[in-house]
Amino acid sequence: MDRKTGFLIGILVILCLLLTIIQSEETKQIDWTPKFQLYEKGPLDLYIFDREVNALSEKAIQKKFQTPYIEFENDTAYHADKNYLFVLPLNVQIDDSSVEELLKYVDAGSKVMISAFTFPQMLRDSLHFQLQPHYNFEIKENEINQAHGLFPSSTFKKVDPKTTRIVSAKKADSLYVEAIEIQYGKGTFYLNGNPYHFSNVDLLHKKQSRKEAAYLLSFINDKPIDWYVNYNANSDRISSPLRFIFENSSLEIAWQLLLLSLFLLMVFRSRRMQRIIPELVPNRNTTVDFVRTIGNLYYNQNNHDDLIKKKLIYFFDRIKSEYFLQTDVLDQTFIRKLRLKAGKPEEEVKALIDLIIRLGNEKVRFTKADLIELNDALDKFFNKKID
Figure 1 (cartoon, rainbow, N blue to C red):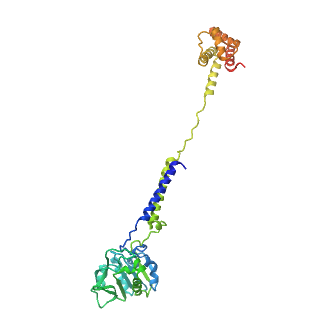
Figure 2: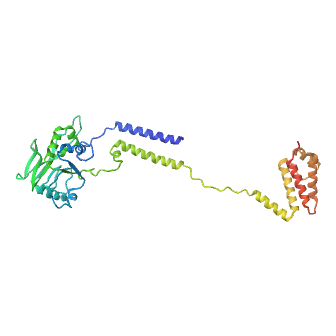
Figure 3: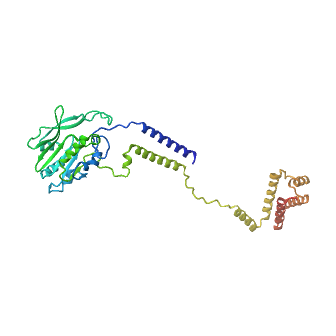
C-alpha cells in the first residue's frame, strides 16, 4: 500500500469516527405530526395498528392499495359481502368518486368505518351531519413521550336523530362525540373523529385506547373487512431491497459513505493506473547494411584510389584523436613518438609509415593489391599489441 492510498483510508476512517460521535450525541427529535403513515414508527403513525389489526378484530382484515372507486368501478352487482375500513391522516379526505361508490355499497348492505380528522362535504350532505373542530389534550408531556401543542380532532354536531346514534362520547367542557352510527339504506356508516386510538403511542401506552380501537372495529367485524390504506402517505411503500437502509438514518449515512468511498477509489485508481503502452517496433540497425552497400559500391567500381585516400584520412584522424600527434611531418621523430604511444615494435611502425608515404606520393593508379596491403597493415597496427 502506497502513502497516498493509506492517507485516503485514514481520512475515511476519521470521517466515519466523527459521524459516529455526532450520531451518538445527537438527540433525535420526535415527530408528533399526525401523519398516520402505514409503515412508520412515529408516535402518530400506524405501524403497530398494521401488525395488531387482526388481533383487534374478529374477522380477517385485508389491505387494499387502491381507491374504492378503482376497486368498484367494474363491479356493478353492489353486493354486501364485505365491510370497509378507513383510517386517514390529517388533512386527507376520501375523494368524491370513492364516496359515491361507498354510498352504493352501504345502501346495498355493507358497513363502512371511517376514522378521520375531517370528512368530505359530499358525505356530510348525504348523511346529514356537521363537524366541529376539537382539540385533544389527553396526550401530555411525561416520561414516555414529549408531546407539545394541541392535537386536532372532530366532534359531531347537528346530526339526524332518525338515522344517527352516538356510539362513543366523552364529557369535557361540553359533550365530545367521538363516533356515531348512521343508517343508510340497508347498511351502516360508522364515523370516528378521533383517529388517535389507532396510533402507535396510544396502542402501546394506553390500554383504554386499545380497547376503544377494538370497540370501534367490533361494529364492522361481522364480515371480512377491506382496509383501504392508499390514502395513507407511504402506503405505496418502495419495494427496493435498499428500503431498509433508507428507513434507518445511520444505515443511510453508512451507505452514502460507502458510495463516496467507491467514487474516490475510482477517481484515484483512474489517475494512478498506467495507460496502455502502444507496441513500438524497434528501429532497425542499418549500419551493417550501409557498410555492405558502400563496400559493394567500391568493389564493383574498382575505385581503389579513392578508397586508399579515405583510409589514409581515417588513419591520420585516429592518430590525432587517440595519440595527440601531428601528422604533418612523417619523420623519424614521428615514428619514435608513435611507437612509444602505441606500444608497437619500431620495425612495424616504420614499415607502416613507409607504406603510407609511398602510397601518398605515388600518382599512379593503385591496384587491388595495394589496397589489401594497406588494409592489412592498418588492421595489424590497431589490433595487435606488444606482449
